[in-house]
Image (cartoon, rainbow, N blue to C red; front, side):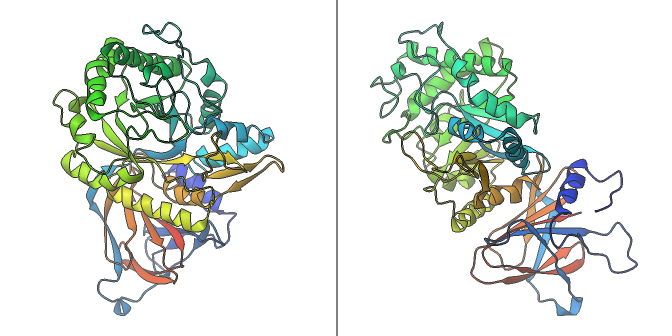
Length: 474
């Protein structure tokens, strides 16, 4: 078992103890014999398709054996965005799958996802009303013409979503949640349906919808949910699929935010982050510029949430609106294959998107059953798969892609510069406690050798083919 002094952060003590059961345990000390005990140590966790989450060791390199340009160098003096956290989306079908397990197995799965000893998810996403992985269609007020929201109710969310989130909070008490609708109440759409319609544009409907949001925030906070942000619409450019969707044009969205939602929240004394999201469009001119460029709306929008094609715009958004936060709000859902090559793609996106100034990152389905199907026969990937017949849990490859970040990169960490080495997909961070994290993706079909500068001590790393890697330097 590793030994610690009182200055060792609690999270890192717990993490190292959790590694004691793994093969190859032991942090690599970068101090030659006789060097002070304060010398840098390196902890390297690697995942391959056949050997996930195992510890590896580097090799010391004689200075004369170095080749210029081969060395990976971390530079904490060059700092970029602050990391808010990592997590996934709480969907009703996920809770249905988890409740099919015996209580102790369900608790073990939630602990592995949310505990600081596990993946350490500190943030989460939730739908306002139905989404494509809910148990069926609903909104929080289906009484047509109820502009005063007298029939607004969160009763349905007390059945699944709130218990799901509170179960996670047992392991992450300060879990932060942001929420967004996939569709407004059906009577607020142009076709009176929960799909293939558009948001009505009349002021009475927009004002009622702002009140709907306000009541939701107040009601969920009264339930003890740490709701820190809201986004007005999931994928506001799309409405051609079978599940809940609704299209907004950019002007209507800006009018809703500027003239209705933001004023309603101010009148009700609600302090919550309002984001522009979730955006799938690649061009700033389509939604981002009309909203952030409005001198009345823009200053009150905290950030932009991107998913799918919108991810390509993270860097451009930061360059044009550097004061705004950025979130990758949903990973690619694929088709339920839960394959290693898909996880490597997700891992590569995590590196690329954090290099492009994302402050937070969210997986889509945290948990699904063995079918992977939605109520609309939409099959997708998940971090965990629950087999209801055998009452077992499978940790899928993308679970490790997320954990390689979330278990090491803590809220409040800052991205730092990293240079040199043979890798295209690499990113580095410094945690609030001073520890540094280097994350490397080797998506090639061959082992790649690199040398890490561990505060003046060169260490050779032989990075396996098709692998995810995290190194923590203390």
